Amino acid sequence: MGFRYFACCSHVNPGNPPQGAVVVHNYPEAWVSSYADRNLHECDPVFLRAERDMLPFHWDEPGFRTVLTVTQRQIMEEGAAVGIVHGYTVPIHLPWAAGALRASCSVVPDSGLIDTKAYRAVHVMAVYLYASLSRRNTTLTTSDIALPSGPILKVRERQCLGQTHRGGEAASGRIHACAGDRLGCSAPRDSNRGRSETCSDPVMK
Image (cartoon, rainbow, N blue to C red; front, side, top):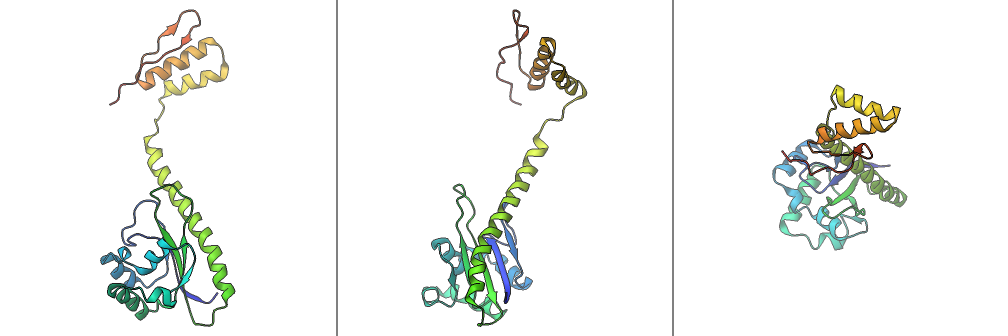
């Protein structure tokens, strides 16, 4: 499509991203390392503009350049020195829950002869790319947290569960008894119906 560099990222420190963050780019390694060491994501003018606006923008637009602070101008100049210049950024504002990470996707052209249709394509693809990567990261993070906390059933407990496939009140009584033992709570039986009806709150350990 005629673009030299791209970055599809949550607005975080690329050297130390939090769980669930998306950090995908092909920027020069030395630049990214220097950027991360100085926490430049906190005052990056591209990030800040993307967090305020909904529409994509070019870095060469007067409305973007004229409001830069001295520090922000320096960031842009340092990026330009390694070829990160004349960029185009798509703000990412998906309907996530409060507290979700801010994000954007940027591309850097090889020349000034890029067809405007290419930028429109970037606009569409950027949103889908970030959403896909974010969902993947969220799924992996949730799995990493959830799987170790799940109980591992003992042989007797698996046998109790297996009884439910064979039915009957006796099987129901056995499975309720096993559940009570597993949860560490009492499970008194109703003598008339032969099954558990109540269970006290489990003791938290």
